Length: 119
Image 1 (cartoon, rainbow, N blue to C red):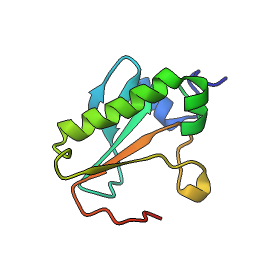
Image 2: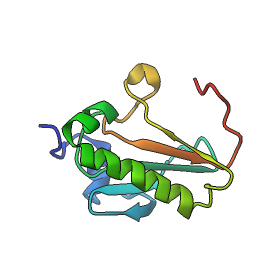
Image 3: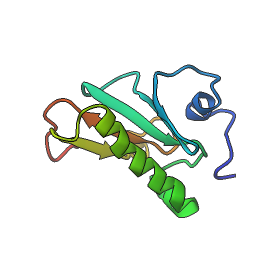
């Protein structure tokens, strides 16, 4: 069921503190931690604590949690000192777009020049 923890989900296990992560922020509804394979000097993932497979299902199923993820992405950027120089928030949806963990998550990327278009 959407929103419920999934036993086979890596990010649900991180939320449950069953798997360690380098946590940088935590709220009642979100968790932010450093990506284990960073693509930029600042690469932090912001996830809802509830399980939804992607950003669209999160927005449809729990709009408040989707807003929390976006707000926390901005807070992470501020905490990391990336507001002045700029940062990117990316949601990958589906394997073809590079999504490898099917628990909605935002990538906060900063600290180097980020080209456009990103794909």
